[in-house]
Image (cartoon, rainbow, N blue to C red; front, side, top):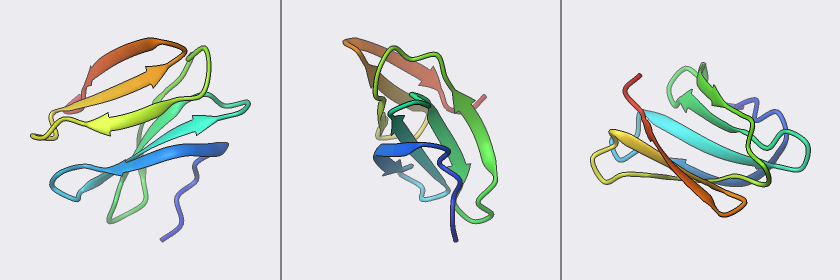
Length: 79
């Protein structure tokens, strides 16, 4: 399955349950995207970051950490 990352990929991470994939982007898009791993559907797009974005899931899969330009943000991955 091909996922539309939109820009250059900085990194990617599978959710602990394997149902979602998060992608941190670089270059012009500077966004994070979360996809349904089975369907490839875009579930969330987080943008407005100051620089390249890196992503990581919490061990329970309930939160997604984004890191960009020295800022760390914990997102509720359930909403």
